[in-house]
Length: 503
Ligand SMILES: Cc1cc2nc3c(=O)[nH]c(=O)nc-3n(C[C@H](O)[C@H](O)[C@H](O)COP(=O)(O)OP(=O)(O)OC[C@H]3O[C@@H](n4cnc5c(N)ncnc54)[C@H](O)[C@@H]3O)c2cc1C
Image (cartoon, rainbow, N blue to C red; front, side, top):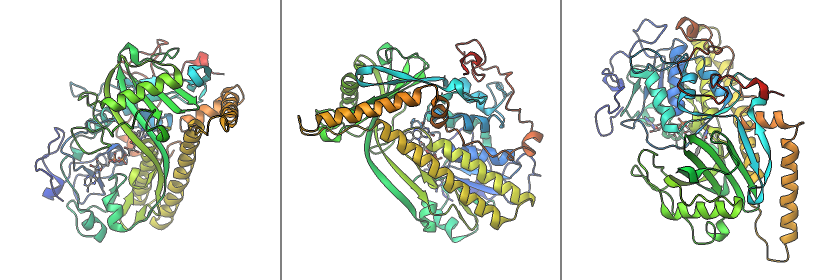
């Protein structure tokens, strides 16, 4: 294990490093001695939550992250009800005074984010097509929460404390070769991202496809960033001939806008926007809202696109960040190889449209950690347990991948044909799509649609964290005695559904 740039960097880093080979910090439910049960490689959102889940299961765990400190970019913002349900079983991070300020990890995230209870579907020129109401969900968390990824990771890292070590790079070749690793872990969880060096060192194929779709996103601030007719804590999705538009509240006064780009026109007619660049890295890396790094051509393309498709003028808004991204769908052929288990983007990627990748990684991390805990307790035999795990991960990735594809197809631009020849066909196709969407938003299908858009059916494993978690003092999911500062519009705690909106 190496420390790139030396030092632990992060303020949470423990003094007894993984690469020192000394004893790891004591995990709840363990006696603090002996080898690690689990080494998590990667402190992205999935590795961080995997560490928390493992600790709640009573496993001795360390998380190693090669970055020297928390990330400053925001990719994933959407946190869905199944992930909130999972996190409501985990303890919150310590507050300023060291005492927990919220009943659970989920409540801590809710206090930092925006509970989106409703989405508006908009057609050509911003014409209202209907609303998607997450209040119809039959779940304690009947909303999609938006939190910038860097804030989510900061909360998870604070909850993890010294179990997380910054600036520690685990050598993938040693992991793949089965060589001894400091802490002598029984299992290694590779949460090392889409390019997973460990997956590559193991030679596990990562098959799938890249889509032709290209998107441009920006975080905009100020009254001009608003979407007319859409509340400050509501989302909007635009289905237009020119392509998909999405808009989400991020925090008061700030919205994330995403538009599908038009490659034929090089953006929207005046040349392609450059890839956004951040102070951290190469093209495609994102800048943080704290450290604005907007890209002017990208901002201008976004403003033109919104004006053309929805009639929304955002030109006067302050641009905090821009980025372009593509979409792909891939899955590792297997997620368990000897002592190594792949989780998160290392195991599967789905299109960012629909915002499922991080959530899927979290839920599969719960299944994976739960499987390891069962094996350690002796209540499951490794071979059948790992076969079950492989099947569940494959099924989950397939469902999420299909839904993400549906999201992209639903909003995909209808290519412009030669004027006068294909125009009627284009119009007919778009009209058909719009009518279908209106039917889906109607009374018969609205609950199903709300479930699909909020990862319904991806419930976290019921058995996980029931025993050790309870012993470790994890509050029940129903607990609502939070000191959260988030103010719900109804005056109720933000995680309790507005019952009046139920069907
Ligand atoms: C534009 C965009 C928007 C998105 N929006 C959403 C959304 O709204 N909701 C959603 O659910 N998903 C979303 N996603 C997907 C989501 O961002 C990813 O699924 C998620 O970040 C994957 O997390 P991860 O922890 O698996 O991997 P990563 O976030 O890639 O983290 C991997 C970590 O491993 C570390 N690492 C790698 N190798 C080593 C090593 N050898 N030793 C130590 N550390 C190592 C890296 O430094 C990195 O920090 C979006 C993606 C994009 C591109």
